[in-house]
Length: 83
Image 1: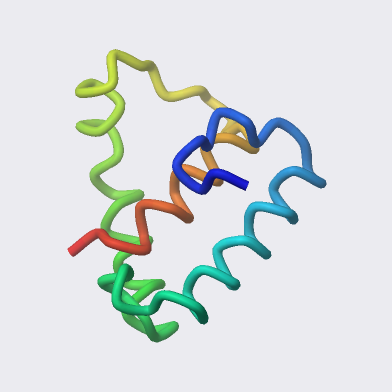
Image 2: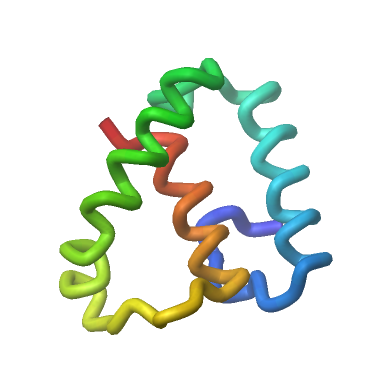
């Protein structure tokens, strides 16, 4: 699974597969991640969620009222490297 293609995450099963792939990547290539432990990862996730309006504007997107499976994948992926 291409972890940078969050648009491919459309269903709950897709998200489960995506999360498994993130877990495998974090174990295999921890140097590619800024936030390798759970507290740092969750802190980065919280910060990114708080500023995701700017991300959406930069992407030319409008944030949905209810998150999509793809948006959840975006959040999870961003938390890997967000500082």
